[in-house]
Length: 222
Image (cartoon, rainbow, N blue to C red):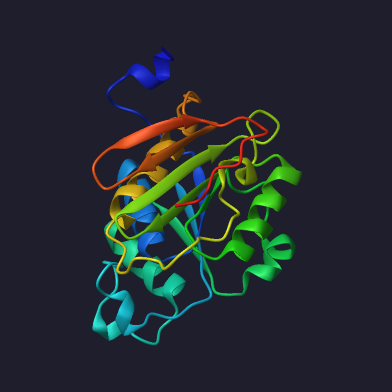
């Protein structure tokens, strides 16, 4: 066991993460990472808060409707974890390659349901060798996957770039669980524990199972 990982107390104040998506998953990811003591967060989202978001995106209230999610979350995170440096970006993901600084953040966390967005960000991370995590949710179900480019199969092998078949369940009841799991995988990486990399964690409403992904695997996304 990694000695740094085995200690009960840990220090991640020098670590940083870019969270792509500030919805049900992203709000949970941000809160758990800030609560764990991460030093720097980037919150990236182009959407504004809507009424239909409020049942599962717990950091937003009716007063936030119409405001940019990334900015609202940034301001609330400052109150929640003032020691954490929080930045926000409210532009379309198509500009990711131009605006994102690959040297400023240790890991990228995908918290979106948009397949095109996942393709853009995952391709960028694969090309630049940046570790990234993807979370997918659908009703009571969800998955999480930590990818280390060059060392583990890409997100496509884990089914993360496939369209969801059938009608999605809404509202999503798994956002809190998968968001927390994404944050946990990030902390694992920060602490040098990569045993969870390359494994697809599948939540079925009751249990979480691990699937070891191979380069040739094609896993249907939940």
